[in-house]
Image 1 (cartoon, one colour):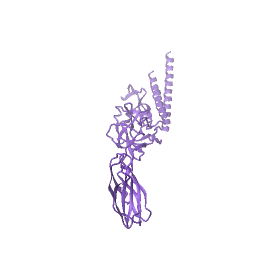
Image 2 (image 1 turned 45 degrees about the vertical axis):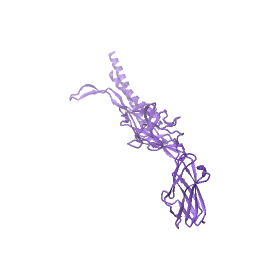
Image 3 (image 1 turned 45 degrees about the horizontal axis):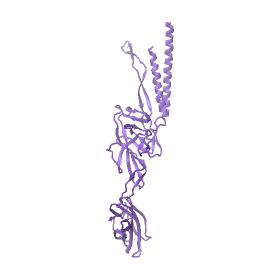
Image 4 (image 1 turned 60 degrees about the horizontal axis):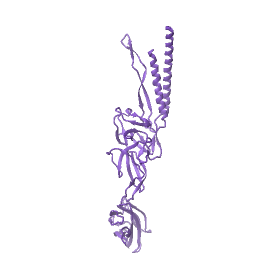
Length: 411
């Protein structure tokens, strides 16, 4: 009897449905896992004639599995505190390189390998846009993201400095006050300057900026700048204003390049940093914009995928930018092992870009995206599949009884 094939197809289809549900539940705690749904379709109908009005009389041949649908909605962001971990929220996939083969994943539980490259748990390299001296090139070919702790950033020579200093009003003529300040040369070496203020009369002081003789191999200090300062009756500096420029240092013994410095006499808001008030002469702060050679101490991932390195010299530079890939038909992706996907003809080619641009999702650093499996939905689907399986089993039993009765009739 051909009818046995119909309930058998139902048993097979519902069994497959239970397998999909079981797989979803098994991956309830798998980072980046996307739940799947099995879709059924009826099989070819057989013509058994037509009714008196011409309507066809058809009997179905059972059920078949038509497709699986993946739910690509974002999972919950779970904070881990691990700098290399990333959670992608919204559209897109991380791009990884598996031995020369490009694959895509939502699982952002990345770590680093022995070379300081970001990798996924399978050892696949996390790909992105490279950075040179902190400048990211989004037109360059994708490359592995490096977060090597041995990375260094070159020294930045000082070009400007300032001090917050008060000179005591009413000081006797000839009174001096010294403010030492350290600046950085092109080799990252600190150089010590000394600003000496000398009272020359009412509301007037002279200044002299010197460099120790040891810095240039001289027996005596070298004066690199000098001039006079004038204050009004309120103690505000009236001359010079803005900044003192042309402070040049040459012939450094360590072989560093000549330095050209400016002394800022006002802060970013235009407030004077040099005053004359009736309190003891004092310098409360010194600032300069140079830095020595720095080594990478930590890093973080920004929302646009930029991996921001923090160095020991307080410099912050981009190490690279994690790439994000989008597809015109995500249902066409082929899911392979370990939560990775591959593009197919159906999915279309990957469109690789930056997080947060062109409809691609954003990245949360120090976190991973959890599975989007919904327990209540899976349990409901499990009941439906179980009942479907039992119903087809009963049909099979009924057909068996009918076939036994038929055999008894002809025997």
